[in-house]
Length: 208
Image 1 (cartoon, rainbow, N blue to C red):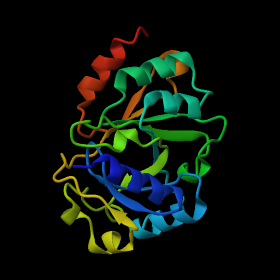
Image 2 (cartoon, rainbow, N blue to C red):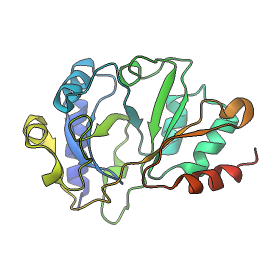
Image 3 (tube, rainbow, N blue to C red):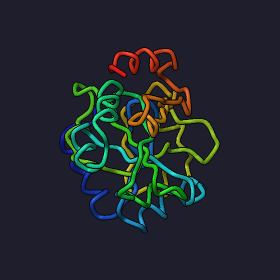
Image 4 (spheres, helix red, strand yellow):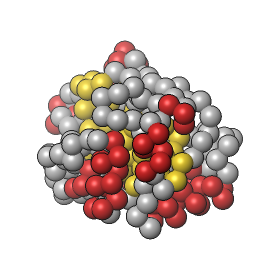
């Protein structure tokens, strides 16, 4: 159980430049302030991940994502509304070069996640994110389903570790929407917990 007090501790950790292990809707992840260069550097170092590789920016609410990236077109927003919140990540155009620390070597593309956290078990949905997030594993190794699956080196190096018990353990499905605004095209970058057929069905309903 992640109660309101724990959620506030999590939010405070990120506000002061900390790095936290936290439960998402899919796997355990690492989180930090996406605008804090030193915190992002620490997160990547904990994962042993190349700083030039992108990470997603996670929001607690879809409207917050839209407000943070106002350049998103109407068709792209409508498609995102079909997919999110939920265990899906999307790649969208980023002409404003927002959240540059999360974009790796491609500042014109931004990854966005809006998890669907069950309010009965988590109060993290009350935290007014955004946050840079990545799975709490060493690069290329299995995604952690439990806190015990998170490598000891990551747990010991993080400033906060939240434990909400077992998670599904399968990462989010990643969908590329960068061409959606122009001609309705999309691509499955990574098939994760949501099957590709379900993504196709959801986007086929979006009035393309």
